[in-house]
Amino acid sequence: MQIDKLIEKERAGWQRLEELTVRSRGSSESLSEAELYELGRLYQIAASDLALAQRDFPNHQITRYLNQLVGRTHALLYREEPLRWQQLRRFYKEGFPQLYQQLLPYTAAAFILFLLPGIISFFVVWQTPESIYTLLGQEIASLVDTVEEGELWTEIEPTVRSAAATTILTNNIGVMFYAFAGSLTGGLLTLYIMLFNGLSLGAIFGLLQFHGMSSGLAEFVLAHGPIELSVIFLAGGCGLYVADGLLRPGLFTRQAALTERAKIAVQLILGSVPLLIGAGLIEGFISPSALPWPVKALVGLATGVALHWYWMRRGLGIGD
Image 1 (tube, one colour):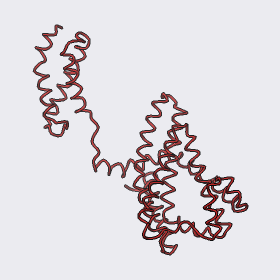
Image 2 (cartoon, rainbow, N blue to C red):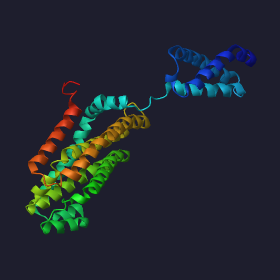
Image 3 (cartoon, rainbow, N blue to C red):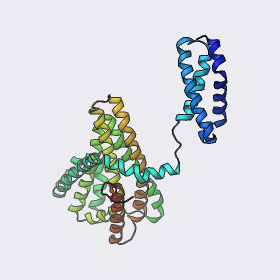
């Protein structure tokens, strides 16, 4: 086909398509149902004309015009929906629990990687307190000195609890993102974070048990621990999940497997941020407070059960 004949035949359609695209102002919601139908029909024609022009007239200005027109219309028709409250609500109602259950084996693996070193280091340090230096290094010396003086470091003055909550929250979110980002090292950094954090917590409890002070730390973590640790285990599971796709892509290329799994893991990580905010507030205000330990235990039990009920309710056959 001659270029002049193509322009003469299709010009009116292109102009109408451009008019509708401009009128939409980047949102298809501003067009009526009939106009949307017309937009889709004219887009298909223009895309076909573009393919013909690229084949027969690749250097002609009409080809560049059609390329731009089709590109703008494609972005209008196939753009991702903006994040809205309805979508956010749908994610937390359905998407988050479903994705959590999908990654549950990896989260369980992260939990075991945290738990086993914690148990071992607890008994080792309980029996031989000096071994804490071997496990955690000389950097732990100031904490050991504090414990040997019969003091706990968990007391937070009421006047500084707001700042403490912010610091705690920042630290927890940092640990979560590091555990996830460790997937890019083939899971090695994720493994290290889970192992080391379990080892550290177990060793510190072992030291306190030797000095008869472990109940004080246990009381401190009762309220915030269930949510905080559950999210950390989930972050570790996300890291292991992505790393598994990187190491064992199956029928996919490694890049495709990494991209697909990262999309799922990132949703879980970002979805967990509000949970860590809540845990940080509890840790900053309730955990160091003078409330009786049964109250703190009740807070931890209630929030922990509620969180895991929310995550597992569909898998357990519980209603929406």
